[in-house]
Amino acid sequence: MQTIAIRQFNVQYNVPRSLDNPANVQRRMDQIVSQLLAQTLENQLAQWNDADDALYFIEQLHFDLPLDLTQNDDRQLAKIWAGALYISIQHTLRQAGRGVICFRDRSTFIASFLEDLIQGRAWDYWYYAEFAELQSVSLGQAILNVLTLDRDVGREALLELTRRDSLERLLTRLTDAEVEAIATQCLLPPSPTVILPNTYGRWIDGLRSLLSSGMALTSVIARDVTRLYLGLLRQQPELGPDVNLVRFIQDILLLRQAVVELSDRSQFLSLLAVNDWTEARRLLGRSPLQPLLITLMREMSGVKVVELLQELQVEDSQPMQSRVVTEYGGIFLLAGVIADLDLDHFLQNCPYPEPDGISKTGLLLYAIALQCLGLENATQAISDQSLAVFAGLTKPPDSAQLQTYADSLTPEIHLAFRRQFQAHREACLNRPELFMLSRLPRPTVFDWFSLSGDPELLKPRWDAALLEVSATVLQGFAAKLGAFSDSSPAYLCRNFLKSQSEIEMYTDRISIHFLTCPLQMVLRMAGFEDICWQITWMEGRSLSFQFD
Image (cartoon, rainbow, N blue to C red):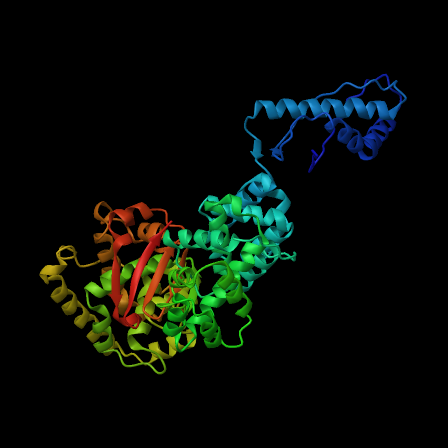
């Protein structure tokens, strides 16, 4: 069924001077528009031959219409009016020029809106006007509202985002609770359980194929259910939509979690491998997953189940400790220069005193990160958790900590720090292995790095003492970019440091996934995609980067 929604209907009436009372004409025409035109236009739409579910958006539509006001039948006038509007709509759509937008169906429209929303440009487009009220809510709440308004459309929109390789970018913008709500409402609606024989084998084969393509799991069941189910439908559309498949994936992930927590995990897998289901079930204990094991026992061999569990990383599972979404993920690109210059060791042993309740290296690296972002960004980034992760801190230092520490520093300490850093810098740049940095001139311009415009960030003398350190770090990063080595600090910040990113922290590694980075191709060409640094001040974790 075709429908038309008109956001605003402007009418200008031109009547001949011979009419005695133009006001009566206006009242009559307004009454036709408000009471008769919509229903009459709906009748006209019955002629529409399009059988698809496409959505068409027309920004503006202009048409002229002569009406015989001697005609006393208002319904006939409404029919003439609706016919002219219907013809004008068809003509405009056939022209398909500027100001005409078409989406294949409602789910494609929703997917496009969500793509533009997470990239911060949705409100630039007039055809998203129906979502305008969502500007007043959080990004996660807006996504949740749009996807769950119509669950079937929401599910298809998620699948469309998966086809466009945009699902991960969407999920990173959501809290675990929001992902769970979307999975529950869009993917797991109430329905009876109906599973045909031999179906589990096809599902397991599909999951194994998907996992073999390199998909890594998180520690959050709802996220992994969403990713695995939609990824599986992308590869094998014939498998869905099927809520039973979603439940199966959820149960398999719960089984994986239960096996990971077993003290005798290896024995459990060994028992399954030799089809000793009875003993394997005993090891699992009084688990709600017992019925799943019974079903798997009937459908397939234990070896196949073991292979799936192994591909689900039960033998080497390191759950994610935390996830941080930030606007400043590019700050981690500076870690390589800090490591090259042994800056963390220098800061730990520098003349500055040890602060109370916080790592000295971490506090100083945090201040250096703020300076590299520049005053404009630092005022927003000061409470950003990503800067704390970068500095090896559990949380950002508050303003009182920064001010108290700054008050303990004397001019003599600042002078000693600057002298020692200059000596340390020269010694590092003379090392043969740092040939890429060996030609760095000593920085002389520090306007970008100075935060003295906001004493709440860093007090002026402490700020001044750190300027050369921060300038050297950003200068060293630029040197790794080849042809971009002479870029200004503002340019480097705008195109690299200020990048929306997702940070995933594990016990042994930190992964930075760049969601937006204007010049990520430059980073790829400079080898950042293949780098894996061991970062001592981040508890020895390895640091790696991923780009969209």
